[in-house]
Image (cartoon, rainbow, N blue to C red; front, side, top):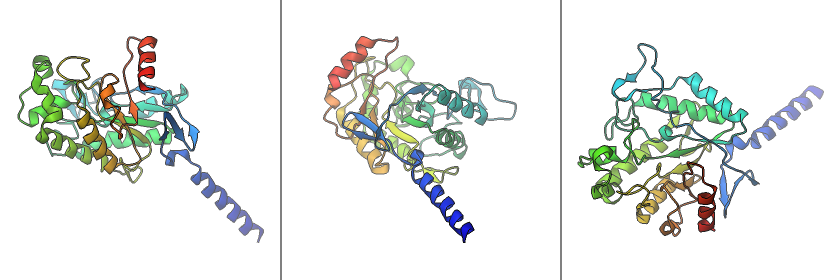
Length: 293
């Protein structure tokens, strides 16, 4: 009888511990405060852009490698190492471009439109799993304003018949077709669905379901034909926000416009406005805080 009582007590502790595992809980917003397990939570961490697709390491012979863009998949040990480093430094989260932006080269999630590369999910699955193991949260941008090795808005434009590149066409008004052209927007949404509905074999959760990904960001430093113009239509932000919330209702939604755009304040789907402060500018940060109050 005593053994049975002890066993039941141990089970109770296990179930209680599982119930209190904050890794299974979403980060939520209450007004201007983020909460985890009903307690204030702050996003403190780093940009680690290469977690899904790298450009910094020459892989061993025989491993996947795309020389024109120096693209390769990060080694699992390197991914685990950066999780340990950020945890040791007191971080709570990581923002990583290539967990969400991966289009247009043979190692991408989408090498070509509507063609999914299963191998490209493997490093992303591992990174999300390792973040969960270390108790870190992830912010995942969906597209890049630029034309780097991992792809971005110019990739979707080219796939949709607009022969544009950032090196030549950054100021071309046609870049706005990424936001305004229904064909481009629909293709982008299909990509988002492919990403968020993927089921991670390590967690048995889709990316939409996994609270490790606490926030989905429209994109990285998005703007229009003029650098820093914040010319990202509010209706596009609303449309993408609604689509993301339909797929992943528990996720926070981040406006990835490069700068705090007042015309987006009426977009109810946005939970977080963002800006990038480099070189470091506390004055710029203070202005943005006052703008959002």
